Structures are given as C-alpha cells and as structure tokens.
Image (cartoon, rainbow, N blue to C red):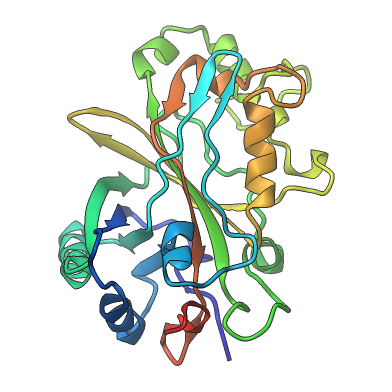
Length: 293
C-alpha cells in the first residue's frame, strides 16, 4: 500500500535545508536513483523529482510539467527548473547538515547541487515581515485531500506535487511603510491576524483566496523564512494533488486575470521556481516504480 512522504503533512520543523540538483550530462543516473529508492524514508526528508528527469528516463507523470516563467505589470517570475529537490527537516541543525551531506554524496555521481538554502521557523510560524504564514492552510483530512493524490493507481496514490520558490524580501523598504500600508499589502492586521474587510484588491489574501477560484485552489503551504549573508526572505513551498491550484494563484498574483498585481511585489521578488513530483512511500522507501525503477 502506498502512503505519502510523512514530512509533507507534518508540521513545519524548527530548521530545514532545501537542496536542488541538476542531472550531469552523459552520466547514468539510474543507479543513483536506484540507491535513492532503497534508502529508508522518514519525516526528516521530503524528495521531489522534476519533469526533465522523468522525461529523460523515458517516463511520464500525468500533470507534471516545468515551472512556468511569467511576467506581469511590474514583476518577473523566473523558472529555474531543477531535476531533484530535497527538503531536509528537523530540530537540530547539526543533524540536518549531516543528513544533507549524506544525501548530496548519494547523488554526487550523477547530479550537481545548484541551490542550497537553510530555512528556519520564526516564532509560531511567521514570515520575516512579522505576519503569520499559511493562515488559511487546510488541516487534517482537508489537508490530505488537497495535497495527496488518491484514486490514480499504484505508484501514484500517495504521491504529491510541489511548487517551490525562493523569495528575496526588501525588509528595509517594507519596514519604512506605515502600519496601515503594510496591513493592506498583506490584507490582514499585524496586531491580531484578522483579515481586513476593506483591504484593497491588490492585498495578498484577496489575490490568493483559495475558495475564490473555480475550481477552488487549495494547497498545503509549508514555507519557511531564510536569511544569510546575501539577504533574507521566504522559501515558498506548496504541496497539492495537482499543480493547477498553485498555478491559478500565481497567475492571479501576477495580474494575468485582471492586470492587478499582488501587493507582495512591492517589497519581495522570487529568484527561483521549480515544480516536482513527490513519489509515494512503499515499505518504508520511495516508490519509484513510475520511473521504471
């Protein structure tokens, strides 16, 4: 029986490391993927496979596609599609470091690490702006229904799709705005996290209200802040049984529907974007049977 990777629906950890890899040309990656499939999996790792790698293996996953590059009135959404994504999770940064290093060693014969970002939980789950992230996240059975593939057959049931982006915040600019202006960008009051009835149409919560789409666009967000010598921001992570809900939200954020740009773009911008398929788990290991492994 297939089950989902347990880290997908688990609560956000204290610390994380995000890794993205590209296949090295002229390297046989099947043996490495075979070793990955033999590795026991638990909550400390979530792994996703990109569309190019699936295609390179001569296989296909219905609904998996490259991340779209988009532009809107005053924003650019880059596509930096990678082949493998790994989210290392936990409460101990030392253990996370060693787990990530072991994962990199496993992939090194056939894959190159192109992105490494360390994330952390801020307070009870805040963005670095101080606003709560993922307030409208579905929970319990609703989260499972939103994030996990069901009824698609062996090798697919229990899998998930994930959209990942690294956003860079201009916190100096944001903190220079009035409190009312900041609240209107987000669409919630910082003081009590209550949604503003009179928020402008550009407010983030109005742009991405999941129930306002047809069909409804529910995803399970597992984003975490990041900060290093190069800046700070948010690693955005959204799981879904399909990529369509995220793509619908992103389209509205960038003004594809009505020309209205999400207020977030006043102080933050994405510098990466990838889609991945997160295989199910069978007998405690990743089930890569859909990849012919």
